Image 1 (cartoon, rainbow, N blue to C red):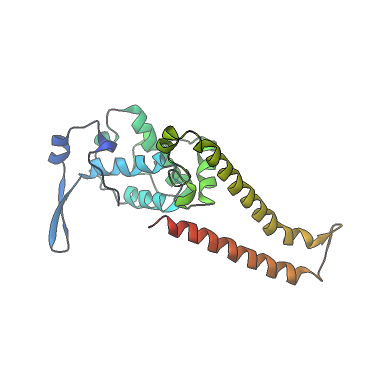
Image 2: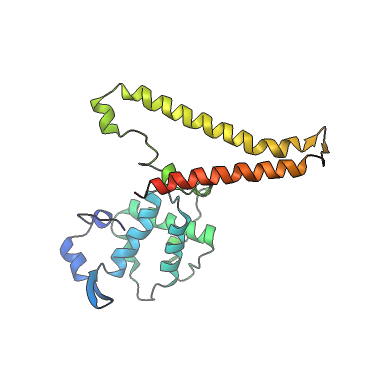
Length: 220
């Protein structure tokens, strides 16, 4: 859940207009006011791309939202007057279509666009490590505001980043080494493969535990 003090994702429309199109829904015994459907779907699509679509679950949310839209949904209101924002929304829809096979046949034809290959490749690359610790601002070891006050911290930050990269490279070589030692001169070394597999599993568990701890530390 994100808390905002203004409607940054739909700043092209007035608060009065958003209020007029808002809806009242029940949450347990309480009634709460939420944005209208056309005003809430756009931010859902736009926000995913703004964060690089690094979490697969976000595209699942987009897919469910798109396929459950009523026929009366007003896409002109959702897209708004900004062509740039409309392009972002179309790209998010395209990712859900190409990666999750979301059905968009009921959508306007102008939203059924062919995506650039680099966009899909980038999202799939992000999905290899879908953890908040790998994404800004968690991936920044030192806030920029601190570096402005203490410029010498830049050297410390660079050294820390190099240590992390070297450690990850070493771990990657360790996880690849067992598989490599199973082959000698183009021939499988059956005498060593049980040891290699056991070692690979042990290293994989260590890596998973380390990653889980890093992910868990971002929640508190």
